[in-house]
Length: 92
Image (tube, rainbow, N blue to C red; front, side, top):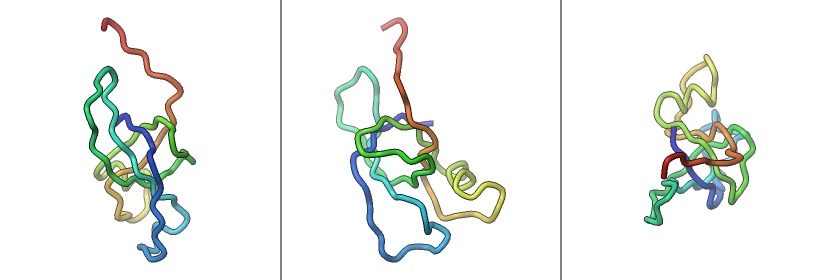
């Protein structure tokens, strides 16, 4: 899983019909305790996240399964699967 922050949205008037009804969000990866610039990517939102929220993201085939359950594969590389309330770093 990846810890990230939603920094924007993507509007696509034409997309694969299996993605109809899903929001596409721009997410930047977070590295707690580090100020380095992070990677950004687009993820399908499965939990109703909003801009500015810290989220949990899965990538690859788990992301595709998250979007469609046990059905056919959906063309998804990243999916937001949780909204984070807090992060605690122990021993730092």
